[in-house]
Length: 346
Image (tube, helix red, strand yellow):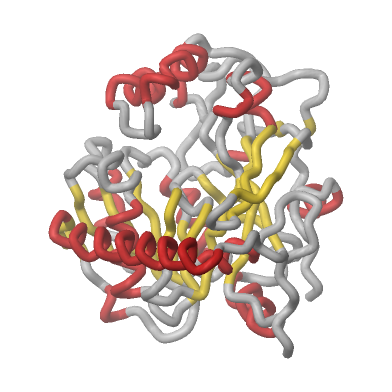
């Protein structure tokens, strides 16, 4: 099938193209160097069958989320999990080490100094992801898409290949509870959407950024509650998590953007026409209040963490994010109907 037309990216010129090539090469070199920071804990990569989707993630202290995270992606047909544990002390590493479909590495270095774990994951993608469909997600991100009840990840990647597409974009959608943060009860293994039942259907805004041509989507619940007076600082919500990987590819800023730059054209945001899904974001489980106090001290999650002291303080004050415009989550078809993802033509 002919490859579908992609959005036209801003022209670069010879100088711009040269700079993008060298930026990508620097990212790849950082990943090669980062392999020395990683210690194998449970390497089962030789047991990975051909075909199927691999899941890549870096995490720290996610024992609360891991049981459902793995159940969700196993149910969708994920073949193997390749995980970097960054100094967990809550049992996450021990839990992962005994899972038969997990390969686990330990990295004790700075999450922030490794481009928020991208250098570590970059090496694993080079070493184990080349030529395969790779899903790179955080432990608090659950990919959903239209028709997923009947069509797992293998069906999804097969459909994308039929359409000549090498990736699948998604909007990161914050789910939150009704009532003060931290006041709910959550049991590990429970669907986070049973506790975090609400989301903002909009507004969301999107622009393409030069020189990479990556989409920049902002808006939604966190902007409304925490960044009303600094909208330009609100979180970036667009991601390109599912990619048929090539060892020459590199994520630049989380999975928000990547190189080569033409990959960024694969996602055109909420209301767009390119096939897309949603990453349900379970950040606001009850542990968020205590975790935010810890992360404020660690200063590992932002390029300029001092600018986000007020953000952490607001979370530790346990606000109620619910308001009259909140929408109760009903499932992927609802999100497609609202234009937050594009329905798939199964």
